Image (tube, rainbow, N blue to C red; front, side):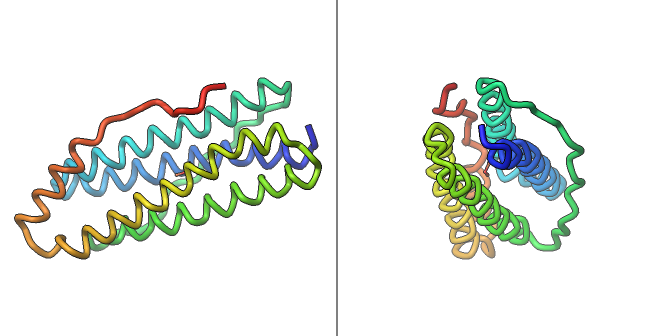
Length: 169
Ligand code: FEO
């Protein structure tokens, strides 16, 4: 595999674990506010991010590429309002989309179509993640200021269950 593509994928393992850490921090924030449904949503999101990291890890191993695990940065976002984490999550997902697109472009530029095909799943996944983040902001804007509606939204988010990724390597 091209060295740059391999390094970008290796870096992305770290970024995905950081995403898990960020979402766990958001879950932590909502737990402390008594919003267990929001906390559940982000705990599951954190699990999905760990899955993303492990898919990259396994892909590199499957291609006999070295994997180097680096330190995961401390989540340092400050949340003041109940909406703050939702906006942080959306802008983070947009950032991750840009990272995935960058690896995609690097793989394409060296005709590494195997990696391009592997990343197709992530491109689609990023579309879903950005939509989920945007939808949550919309719901919060619509209902967040009403206590009963917030209770219902929290109950809805409590119903999210974990599903393993559809991509199998
Ligand atoms: Fe791994 Fe939220 O993208």
